[in-house]
Amino acid sequence: MTKQPTLTTPRLILRPFTLADAPSVQRLAGEWAIADTTANIPHPYEDGVAEAWIRSHVEQFEHRTGVIFAITLKDTDELVGAISLFSLRAASNRAEMGYWIGVPFWNKGYCSEAAKALIRYGFDELGLNRVFAEHMARNPASGRVMEKAGMTYEGTLRQHVKKWDRYEDLKVYGILRSESD
Ligand SMILES: CC(C)(COP(=O)(O)OP(=O)(O)OC[C@H]1O[C@@H](n2cnc3c(N)ncnc32)[C@H](O)[C@@H]1OP(=O)(O)O)[C@@H](O)C(=O)NCCC(=O)NCCS
Image (cartoon, rainbow, N blue to C red; front, side, top):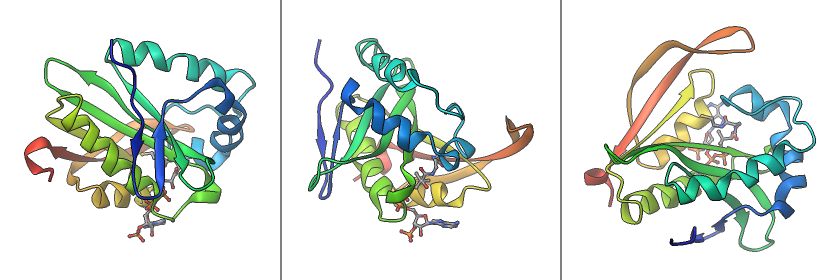
């Protein structure tokens, strides 16, 4: 069984999470702004949630159902966020990408840089044919990340999810292996 690798970009190291990251995850993912535009991040972010989430990663990788990376700064080792490929479907070589970046690190290009590396890894190492991602229409920064990662807008799923008791439109982006460099 191969181990989850570490990916390197000009400014970032994408590596597996360890339990030592749990306090930083709780602090960063615990901000309301992160829960507000993601599907499954709880708010408030209770003690123990980060540890349970991190413990689930090895099994997902071993079963090839998902792979989750800690996004860290090359210069300082600081954790800035998380990025993942999930709902991997071996039958169709397809996965969905998801991510969050801690608020103090927004708008520095980190998520776009990580997304490019993750998509490359998905095509080259996981044998994927398609990576897609969805964002709430009211979260255009995420759509911009998808565009900068080379993905194409494919359409809008109207009122596809319910968040804080409101139905939200989801915009879908995708990239095929044949479209990647
Ligand atoms: C979405 C998110 C991951 C972006 O991370 P990031 O590291 O700041 O992203 P980047 O810096 O790589 O790119 C952000 C882009 O969005 C743009 N942007 C930021 N706010 C924007 C807004 N309100 N409207 C339009 N574009 C916006 C930035 O200018 C930048 O584009 P540019 O480089 O062309 O100027 C981050 O804001 C986040 O974690 N949000 C909360 C969780 C979340 O929404 N996750 C995604 C769920 S689909």
